[in-house]
Image (cartoon, rainbow, N blue to C red):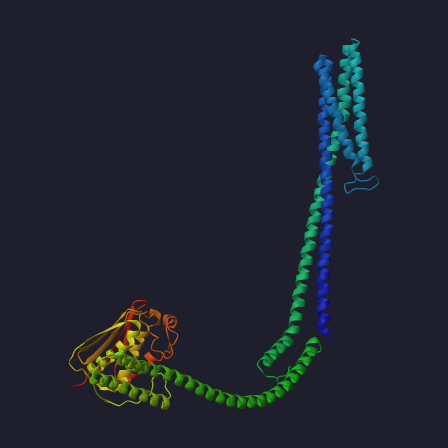
Length: 529
């Protein structure tokens, strides 16, 4: 059932065995190399000790000879010093011999600790005997037997030093040199053997890893591809897809569970789809009904707010003028009937205009391009502007604002609705009076350029910020400084002037400097008288 797991376990165990074998081989090889290196170092140290012993021995022999021949205090001091150095060299050799392998355990070069100690004992005995001989020769010399002393010295030099000590030193040095060479040769052979073992083990491990990897890859490639394809199909929404595997391993077990999961997901998705369809239908019905009711409420609320705003804005200016005309007339004394008649005539005209505003507001749902009703006729714009300026003066008296007019006495004829044009001028004049500083001045001018009549109105009020100039003709928009100055505005006047001028084929522009004032310029096309 779990074939793939078994194959994978076998591959891991064999690979681990290769690694373990290689580690053991390398560990054994390193230990052997360390042993041979230690042997080589011991041989070289012993070689150095023998050479030093030979050097110190011959130096001591020479000092003894010089002492016997010259019999000087300096020579005696040299003998003592050389004797001390010889003893130190001999002690170092003895210590080195003691540190050789344990007695009875044979080393690779056939030497053991007893043989080494025996050689050291020979050197010790020879040096002690040599000292004894030198002492005897010294006694002969002191007894006056100089010839016998010289003969004994020559005999000792030939028979003992040249015949015994020198061969013994040479044999010891050659033995240590052979031991060092043998240790080096063994170490090189062991290194070559370890390298061969490591290479063979590495090649075998690499071949096994390659073969086992290929076999495992061939065994898992097809099932993995099938599983990946199945996951992609399920992720794409094809829940009816099933994975087909005919192997007898873990992948078949996984594929069967995957197919079972896909089947359950398909059933659940079908149920969810049916429930969602019913829910969406009900939600759509309720949403449509709510949206319809909400839009109706919004439309009614917007219409109500706009109706109230328009009424408050449109009725404010004519009422203000009517009140001003009446107050001026009542305050006047000794007026004739003609002046009262003129004042009442203007009040009647304003009342008629109020009635027209009320009718418009009651029957029209206003938008940004207000669908106003117009009564077209030829209008003397010069006369209309003069009358509007008189009304401005009434509104301006409250804030001690002066109003001036610069216009030609000649008639300026345009085609339009007189009441609507008066309404346009009222809006501009009302804004100028409302946003001018007390004691300021409003200048109105009418001029003719080519085929156009141009009316300009300049105030010395709060002005309009540069960033708000493009938006002042939007419905309900008020600049920030206007909101701070007056909180009773609605932002409907200037949009209405734009709508009136658009219907008359004209346009309006504005230039302004904040805290210095504004200039509104109205342009209308002229007609023949």
